[in-house]
Picture 1: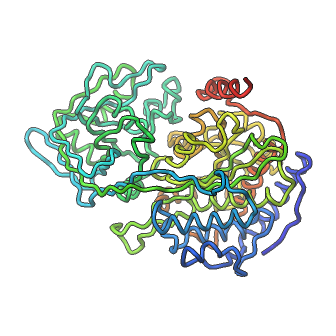
Picture 2 (picture 1 turned 135 degrees about the vertical axis):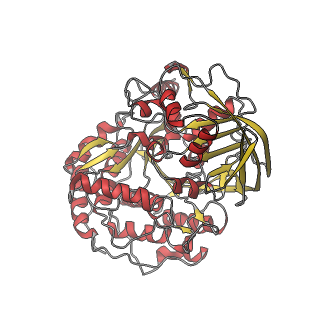
Picture 3 (picture 1 turned 180 degrees about the vertical axis):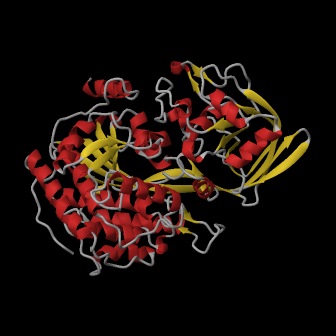
Length: 581
């Protein structure tokens, strides 16, 4: 492995210099970096692999060390890192071993683990749903025409002859003067909902946030609101452009084992049935009901829309295998020398979709190399640099959370049960699905324009000759799709970045092509696998920048906030006011 000299973080300019020089040098070496070492074959092997002479980790952020972590975590032996069972045990033992190797303290008292209670649900693969119009019933199949699950934790859910109502985007937003449920009682009924929100549909910047998806556009919100309205079921119509991913992502994500927090932890109302319809199934349903889906979709994107009864009914018997489960967040602490009660958090989710025996094709392991072995490897690399430099004034918590793929559950549980009070948490830096296609001229901030963390990020990126940009597809709602969002809702400033799309080799066209290729062909599929030919120069640059942001916060008395006008600022202001009392 190529070694690089250490740079002490005495001055901000020295930090920037370290980031810029290390990133450039590593970028040149990344294309030929060896991926040394073999993945462990057992839990014990995983725990001791770091002592193997097959790979020697160095103190600097390097493509070689990063690749080694990704190779191990995304190997077939880890089975797709599904929460619970032997593959979780393999994963968390590997992560604990890394933290122990680095000499980091346990992050949760005397333990590296925080137990997250969960309820596992596996819907029967032969699940069907019957939609009846004018006495004529048609049956839809699980995975092919629709997906259907329940979050109530019951082995049997029976819904019979539930009337369907089209409720547009299914939004109740008093502050925007918008209520798709106005004037209609949907208790016991099935609501049919469009994905995304009216701003995307109309491209009108005066509606919600225009093209940029708001939380009202996320499927999680739509189910939450339908449950609050008392619906028996909610079906979201899948459209690739509005959702930001194809039907195969929905099918792969929803037909395996699902996890949810138990009602004792999360008592919010829950739907008996939650599901999706393919675009073709939805179009056919509306035609059978004598309705024009395209026309209604256009109307639903305008103020004053009224829900439309569909003269159709739903019946379904959902049989599920229910298991009481537990998973674990893994965390390690580097205590601060002057303000150990204040902390910066680096975070990534370790879980993925596991192994799905009923998946079509020979490869049934969803390895999750990019999503999100890369983020985990990034946190471990930053942790390695922190422990080899001068100890920071504030504490740094390195946290690898579980159950992100099930709806950000691990981070949600942590926010409810923090080991460091949220009022004393300076910021969260989230790493999820890092770019492995080379160096970029820019750096993307998901949710650009949200917080003062960007004021620290900007000069660090500029030192590498990079500019900050907003995401190119704000309609996909990436800000709401990763674990930092739970912290943001709770007031804590959170930063979630991606390598840019303006590639140093190939420009914006190359970056867009790579992103679209990954989203279409590998995201949430068994094809998301480690590739020794990845160009990790961009990863190393990104990690150096994020290392700088956290290090500046950890060695200062800064308390970055959300920008004025941001929805989360009031919560943060109240937190900090309470902290100063």
